[in-house]
Length: 518
Image (cartoon, rainbow, N blue to C red; front, side, top):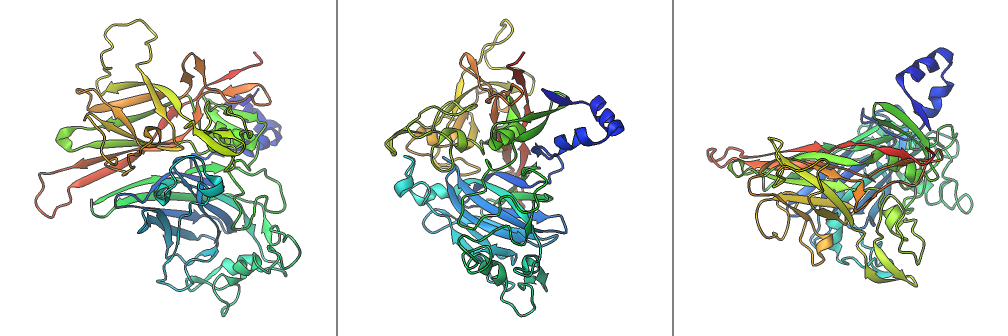
């Protein structure tokens, strides 16, 4: 196992940078918030909620970016397109509810997309409803079939490369804004038409051979993206914001052309398309590993053996709390379609996950296995008390099991009995299948504020671990991102004074690993 401490970093500086280059070029979560991949753990268009997102290009390069919206239950894609950001550009969009109860993307931003939604004039609003093709018909996964399934989920943004200008395609110029609108490299061209045509009769499409060459006028990804999201409910006067998790050095560095530039109709690149080397800050050291698959390297960067956050349901404050816990790479380990790596006919999940989504028989869904993961937890109030523990020996036994079955899970903290038709904050609905609905966290009557520790590693008498790295290292737990959202209602204010408040707080976590070579 290779590990870089402060001492080895100093030595690398004295003896040359070769030892550090391999580490800096590994997949990692960038704590400064910039990266080649952005992960947004949750969007919702339910119950009056709208979700606003932004993507910012901090560089002087023109970016080719894959934008992908994914539903919450089994990570089936509901909308996918290409975005081309000019230098220092920002793209914004909203996810809102359709008349049929599903979700849709709306944008008034003039930045180039393929297909082009906005139309190229200030004030225009382009939109596209989310689609159910990936979980219905021949892709039926045994889950709910209605379009409402698209109304909540999560978002992944993957940089595919940097555009340049060539004689065959002035790609960078095509995305450049002139007076606020892209002009396709010339003052009189239709907005973004050069990039749209490049995927049709142009060099990226089929007009210059079959197939076209997406590396024309493209270079490797260079990073420098950041993003954020806000969940706003106008009727309730609430707004909750969070920053996207930034994954840097996702792509193997050193390529002359873009490594993942694909047409807008492609489900690639995916989170499994990146480099197979990871860099993780763990236990005070930077741990560098090589893995068999790119998705395993990404897993390592967001793997936690424990997750911590707070809750409050204090009645005097009108307080409510919900958590989002999203497993953005789960589908690769639990499904054999939709990009998953589970072998057809197999019901064996790929570690570190332990259960597949569905039981398969000759390509048809036979029964829903629900891909549920069982967790132990400990709950504390603000004075370090635990419910009904009394005086016990150490270590304390787990209090009970707790199941999360979805890809993007909503956990509702409550002291009340029963279950409403939807969670109060994020409006995640109650479903006929209890494993696919929001999850109730039932608090004891005298525990109205405190914190919870989820054990992501322990399951029964075993431990969830990744497959071994090339050096024989197994990370423990599951790859997870998410946040806590809490609201407060002040009923004592005068009429007309805003009385709803809220905030979001990222989960905290710890990491652990073992060596199978020791």
